[in-house]
Image (cartoon, rainbow, N blue to C red):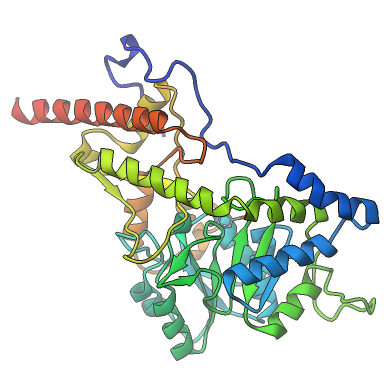
Length: 396
Ligand SMILES: Cc1ncc(COP(=O)(O)O)c(C=O)c1O
């Protein structure tokens, strides 16, 4: 497929920004705070999976209001271990509109992914389609809180309970999100967070599983340590998915700046929405009233017919303005080579439509109001031009 060219006329216009700025530039906690925490581990000579990891797990469990948090090396390894430790077999229902790691955790366990469609407004897993996809082979549902927007967690809990299924949330984007007044982290059998550098709470690399199930937490602690809890005789198939003390020091210091980051991401999301919502052909992710979204990403959906410009053409024009964007997440899983062969039943029309039009804009704490305004102005300019051109074609 050829990529769209720059829109006519743009070559002669000055770029909206004289220089390219980064799509993502996460704010890290003060280095002194990280070093102060890490010094303790370093001087003890125990640099992995020790006191700081435990302290981080306790602090995270307190914040999330859950009994157990188990720190791991990544969200992907956490998802893999949770599926294994819960003894899931057969089919797993999951969204296709997600990052491929969600599906890879399913494949690593030798399970069969069954893709369900997303909701057209929240872009999260559609509970009605989940119901339709349940068979006597279904073992679990894995839902995602897309960009930190809480999915229909309580509805999915009822479905899982009625049908005797395990329920796991890929909460990669959602440390700090809230659903119906409760922190994300409290839902299902387990929720799994990512602490990689594009997230709001950063460990460098890392993941965290939250659960109220003590047996599951014990299995995960063994699972992240080759399946062994010290007897030198692993009782389940594990892997090395431990978190290092340095990663825990970074995450612990990061907890102190998390709320300020969530506030800033929300302020930027509101500013974009306010400045762009009158444009034709742009849609925004719906967050349910009372829920809190971290806006790990802020994405818009471009309807090419109504906006007069396709998502891809808009991305090219914005890049000429030195504004980098991403397509989180395109293509959807059922159109990727690892997963294509598993998708046999029904259309995923909403997933295709959302994924075909999705465009993620820069959103991070240090992005100034002026830059946000400049990005919005550039989008308005490109869409108005596309819209005028489309109108001219219709009229002539
Ligand atoms: C939805 C989703 N799930 C899982 C992951 C994987 O996280 P990690 O890199 O911590 O394994 C990501 C990464 O961004 C993600 O976006």
